[in-house]
Image (tube, rainbow, N blue to C red):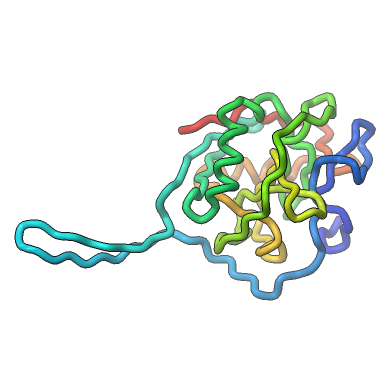
Length: 217
C-alpha cells in the first residue's frame, strides 16, 4: 500500500480494527513539502575569549540538551536521542510519559513498511489508553529523516498527546507539519525490522510487537 494514496495514515485503530474520527491517534496531511531538507542538526559551536589567564566566551550550538532513551521491544532494542534544545516542549511532554512508565507494555499499533512505526496509544487488547491534555504543535529545524521520532496527532495541529512514530526511511513530506524531537542513534535495524512485519487491514501487526519499556540511559 503506497503512503501517497492513503487519506488516513496515522489514524488510530478502534477496538474492532477500523478507523474512527473519535480516536485519539493521528491523521497525516497528504500535502507534500517540496523543500525536503533531510539533514539533521549535529550541533556545532564557536566561541571567542579575551583576558590574561582567564577568558570569557560566547557560542552557539544545536547539539546540546539531549536525553537518551532506550526503547526495549519484543523484537529488540533501539536507542533514541531526544533534542530538548530544538524541541523543548515536545521533549518535556514525552519524558513526562516516560517517567510515569506510560509506554511500558504498550504495542506498536500501526506499522507501514517504508513509512513508519507508531506506538504510544494502545495496549495489546486494542484498548486506547488515557492521556494527558494535548500539547501545541512545535515545529523546529529537525527533519523526518530515517529513524527520526515525531509526534502523531489528529487533523487538529495541536492535538498530540502520547502517540509517536519513528520513520522507516526519510519522510520529507511530513516536515514542518509534524513535530520531530529526536533521532535513532542505535538499533535502527530493529526499527526497520518492526516496520517490515505482516499487518492486518488496519496496519496493526498480525503478531503484536510489544514496547516492553522506555527508559532513560
